[in-house]
Image (cartoon, rainbow, N blue to C red; front, side, top):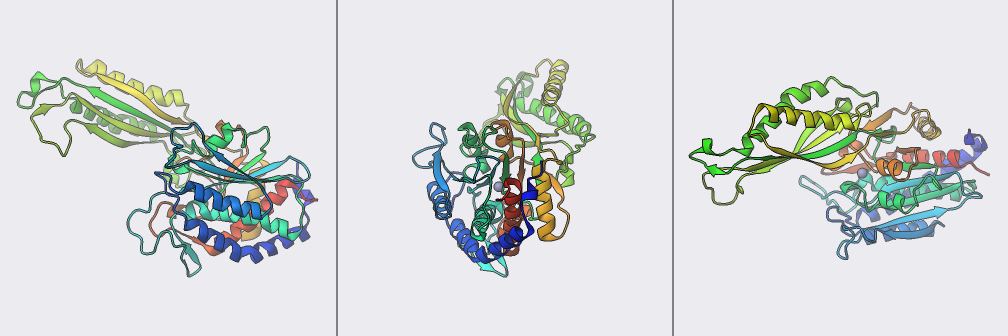
Length: 430
Ligand SMILES: [Zn+2]
């Protein structure tokens, strides 16, 4: 199947010209969106963010609907979880290309030298929390679609755009919600492009897996002057951490994935401690105490080549071996979260089309990458069952969540060109 054949060079150059012509409107839109502090947690100003995007989509001729995550615990009166989705029907329902971007941003943090919500433009850069990650991606996708429309080129398939919430906290009220509602689903959706930062010239085809688990050690309380009469849970937690560092880590460090994960140091599995707890509160009055409860939360990142059952079995066996060796070693193990690895076929039409568009706009080959962390692609593939999904956007990945986050305006415009060419080629033109 090669839909690209319906797109003429004349149509493409007309659309590229329209992207350039719309650049100032796109920048103004992005500034306005950055000025809405949609900070997550806790999920501030989501309604305003959704309405700002929705108003622009409506102005550009989309059918717009708002989808609040009714019934989800994080959807509260104080912090409603509202998503927006716009649909522009072509002459046929399919194929359908869906551009998605999350409009929640992480808290500002320290170290800024500019106002994080002013949308300051200086030296060809637009500054603000959420510019790179990833309001610039939303601005690019919406204005890419509009550039096609203004050029007079008629698309055959359907173009959709969504702005969603909560990506930074798992995306359950955002993309997962739209997928559960059937709005991002293989029964209607063919291709999903998530506009996360990919440095304008790279295509992100998937991510590694995540397994979070909690280990709690149960000891026996006692007086700190006679520790031999109790069992200190922290001692046993230390044994667990020691085993993980000295047995498990060297073993998993020998494995490497075939996925093009960036940075390359993340092509191997990893395990990291998220939290350690137990004993008396740090601020409280201290008493001599053999503590009877201590625990830690671990973050195990696994490769597509590692079956989850195997990953979990390794942890279980490590703990069991310690228990067998020490009669007083008592533990409980709790699974907290699993995200499966996902990867779109590098030879799929979606990946090839985006890569080819990048090559044409930027004049260089587009590297395929995969993410060490996860993003909303997991929901698109696991809940929506749409297998053709990638991330592509203008932001510089390393600037995500950093102070003085910015997007390069030239990257913003170039990414909109890439998105416009991609949409035309995937949807076909009349
Ligand atoms: Zn993001």
